Image 1 (cartoon, rainbow over the protein chains, first blue to last red):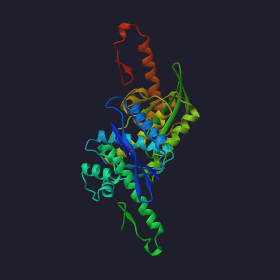
Image 2: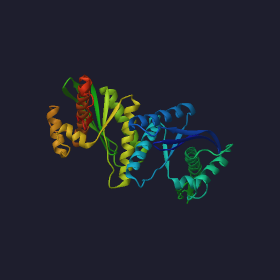
Image 3: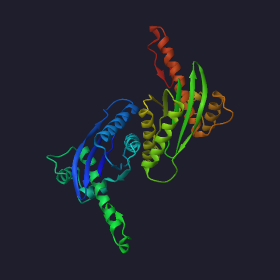
Image 4: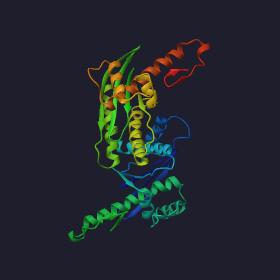
Length: 178
Length: 178
């Protein structure tokens, strides 16, 4: 299973690609798609579409996961972020990838072990979990984090599937069994 | 010139296709793309992508125009609308169409002659301008309206291009020369 994680944004969209083989995770690639600070929205969304499509062509992910975004104090920023996220999701579903969505809290919980972790902790734990030689940038770290979160969720789902009927009343919450 | 107009929305995306031949406008098609009221966001955005792509394949527009959306009183709705609009724009730019953006005021000004027109007035004027046998639905009417607005803007731009150098300091504002 090759997972493409996306941290959406209009200026900068982070991406991270990891391979999950059994319980092992292997780093494949990460980086950012930058649309620049200026210009009309349609060409900027095209940069996101082209960037995500190129990543898919290059790394052939088998599934995708994207961070949920929340409303900004500035409604105009919320609208722009929404459109950028819509472009990224459209690029993913257009390539016939299933797209899972995780909240920042779920991602921090999966990566750091607490939903209230700060960005440097996420970068540090992503680096440790994937045995990176250094710290990834914050956008790439968030994108790798959502990919790791999705990998963990798949483990939990497989576990439920393999359990005795008596245990199948368990539910997933924040990537954990409850 | 065949213009595809889009009125974006998450539940319902209106579309309208018109042909502009000189000063004449001809109706080609209009309707709505409906994503249903339920379900996860990525499959709903895929419905918008597939719908817009099918319209492009069927009617072969040479350019596109989309209504600008504004922030809702409910920030969550703003975020959803933004993502739907992002999906529609991504479908358009993915088909290599240039996408123009017009505000509701610009569209009403172009179609009805006043930026403060009500929806029934837009439906009525769209029906008259395109010689439709009846009133289009509100989403289809808005989509045809943005296509008409774009057609008018092209006339104004052509006019500027053909003018004497002394007049070229004029600018376009809301589809009109100022």
